[in-house]
Image (cartoon, rainbow, N blue to C red; front, top):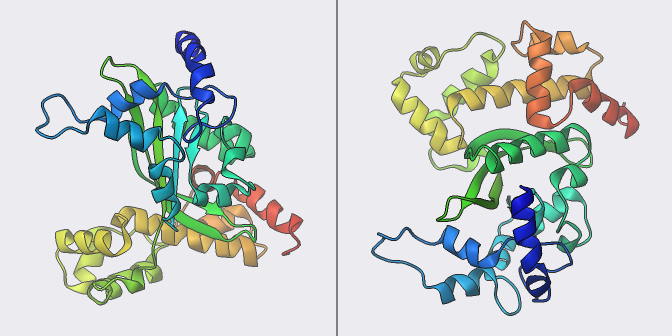
Length: 295
């Protein structure tokens, strides 16, 4: 990593002086290397030209990629360098962090932007991608609004790897989950979703749900994924933790009682899962609500 830091430092002065993708004084990703990393493989029949990639990632004025991502209302998008610092973000991510300008995020790590467990969770994900080269796909998480309401999303992170094999940084997306009832196939899966909502505290199996609604397990799984964008396992997890949030907000039940009501016999396992998805423990969530004067 120290070697990569020295290589970046050599290119900082000229790159930082150019407007567009990397405003500010921090050291950006090496642009020529990014162009190689995101281009098609050598044996591809169609390859974007270096000029086209340069116009996309490092234009004269502002990045069209960033502009396009700004038009996506339910998608948080970001690029990070090898040290996990933001080098490009879109408007959704800016709003989630509460910053006044997108530029306020550039050069910062997730641990500097998100406090407490949320920053730690994001930092560990970044290390998986940057240091271990792991691709993260459809990681189910939720973040909290200013009023403490959970917003569910699926997160993907991919390492940007140059042809020479070095990791240059990562690209990430976090997509808010849509309302299932708006999907045209919702009527076909509505009874299954209703059954899951009614029996989420039980030891549910996909085959049992499928039998209840008269569908094969393969058909049910395909419909659930199409309508909710979640696997049946992820859907059950979401339903359980939505109920957990309601109980933490609206009752004085202990965390152990909340865990049991949501299908967990081990409250420690429940707390670990809650922290993994929300970025804070159930106790910390309840404390935040009290500090906001909701209880």
